[in-house]
Image 1 (cartoon, rainbow, N blue to C red):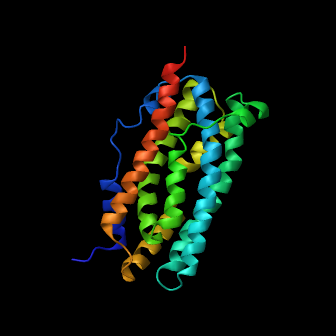
Image 2: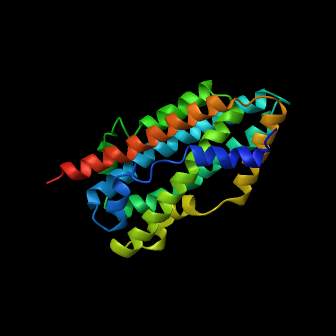
Length: 229
């Protein structure tokens, strides 16, 4: 029986959901036990992630548009919206960086962690090599977990660290549902199905590696928090 785009999106998200205990830093932040230096490192790593992901999404939008009628316009609309979202997120990130006590000199001197940057590196690989409709599915599954993480962090920053709404705006942005993005994902996946451009095996490979890179991001920051005196 042929599945609908909605069914495929939901089943893929379920299959690629991370282990609830995979993110070892999140419980520390949730109870206010993470060090402020770790929160600052999270902010500075995101500076690099957001900028890289935006360029990757723009490239995916360009690749999709070049494919023409084979799910191209629908995928291009999805990736174009993601790129716009990264621009908005970068703008909101500034208030969080400042709330963490990071001045311009410290930000300029910061050296990103390799394990934290594995995520945008793999997104860049997908931008060059992945089938756009399949990448939509993999990213959509990852965003479900990321959105939940952001909701938890935003709540904790307010409750335990005294951050105001502006300082939490970066995390609020990703935690909020986006019906328009969901609709674009649905349209892109349906167009991919109609064109015969989706291989679920590849989707699960893409998504599994993406989630593994996400786990490495949080684990690297958790290790840094634990190494501190």
